[in-house]
Figure 1 (cartoon, one colour):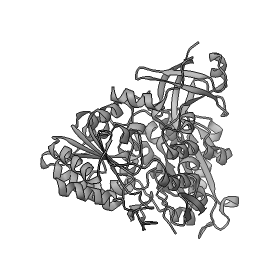
Figure 2 (figure 1 turned 135 degrees about the vertical axis):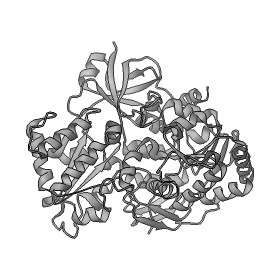
Figure 3 (figure 1 turned 180 degrees about the vertical axis):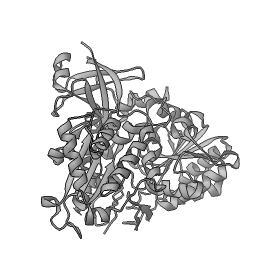
Figure 4 (figure 1 turned 90 degrees about the vertical axis):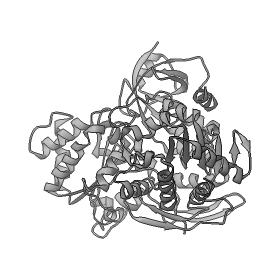
Length: 407
Length: 128
């Protein structure tokens, strides 16, 4: 069995046969996972300095030299690294007085903070499979982002108290700005919300739950939704990026909604984080500093705030270490350009815009395939995995140890 | 002909798969460099499915392919898959939460005679 690190479900039941540089047989792999594993054979990085191939030792030495001389380095990425590598990264950031941030900073961070600090009740995916009769995918489309979510946990499987499964006992609700693949599956339980109006939608649900007339949306449908939520025995809200980007500073409305629902029945929240160990980084940094992301260790102190986010730090840093992430593809143009113009070090198994723009490229082993370790699934359950086959490539953790040694 | 639209980004498993095959592949460009427009907007712009569209705002611009939406009517609302093409249009001066507005980008769309923007051009812009 292999653990798939293609998304934060960390599916542990993967069976693989590799032959002649490709996957010849696979069992339980989704399309996303298959592409993730097949990527092992495509566009792998080589050690580079200024676009010229060098030895691994030279690349590591150059990275150490850049970081050692930097006055305000930025460490970014981390959501595709194991807990062990993340811990090594936080340690190195502290020693160098660096700013450290991860992908949660511009996606699920606000929500994850609510979960990790106990401001909203949460549960495990196994609880979802065993008990949940209502799953609300809000601004989330697991059919595209977490393809086995519905089949392993939320909808199709039989669970301890859900023996009749989706045929009779489970309901999936989609709240989205577009009729996504998941919304199409939810059929009658799809609620379209125009961009940026999720706050009004929540206020309408709260009104219905209080027995008042909703001001937003189709009144009849909102009352139907209220009835479904009231009749739920064990509900779970799975917020995606759609909800995060829409609510932003109004996230307290979600807290109010969940509190109200829990006065009536049981409702949990599980953010649909994308990368396989984003939650792990958030938990580790929270344990170390009291903050889940956006931390600067400059001057021996710990500072947290918007100025320490990758968006701001990309423009103020004089060197950036990016690990297992492609911010030049994923972040707004201005941030991407700022990173491209700094002394950029990319540690990555595969070629990306970020590795192509980097001053130094250090190739790494792919976790789950070429390197083992520990990660936190999207629900916080710790998953350990062994490498599927031997590789000469170093893991993130080993590369960071070598950089630390060189510094 | 030009139209004002609000663009919302989303994830697509097929584009994700194409990205794993390589960011410089035709497949990745074809699946990323497209804008899904409502039928009414397509008609108003006088374009057909697959025709090139210029998408511009105060941040930047790209040329992508038009795709007709099969969703319920949503005039004025367009969709693009999360990609470097979409991110050319996203502001990085953000609100208090420091989260960019990936889900609500105002832009102008119009038919274009230019080629679809290549990812190598996007990388050049970042380095310029």
